[in-house]
Length: 149
View 1 (cartoon, one colour):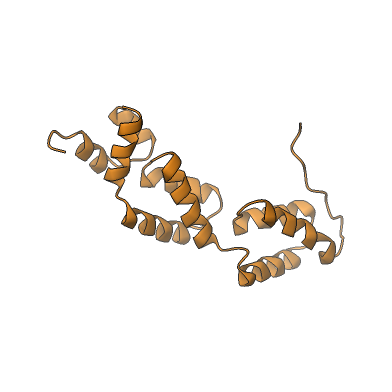
View 2 (tube, rainbow, N blue to C red; view 1 turned 180 degrees about the horizontal axis):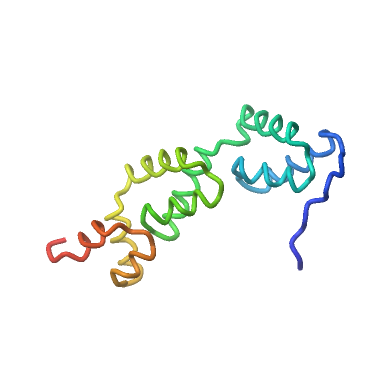
């Protein structure tokens, strides 16, 4: 089954675009960048895109900070990883660097990268190289593999 593609608006009024965007938002949590890209695919005018994003932000339908915090917590529960890897993944989703940094400071204030590395190793014995590939810092890797840790 091929993925559904949004229909192009071909100059349709903003009223014709809005129901599609609301359905898109209802399916799952979205970032502002994702909604902007969706609106562009629908053919919405840039001014209409800005207006809709501002409106959805004011209504609480879009909140990149809250999205990022929820996404990071879920991601770490499923697959512990280091800060560097999470940062790259968030930025790849269109979360701006400042929001990404605030989110990672918040989450890594709740659980340390060392604790996450220990959880990772408990689930799947790994080498230092594997921890590096999962974004753990050299300091963390040294700490979890050092003899008194």
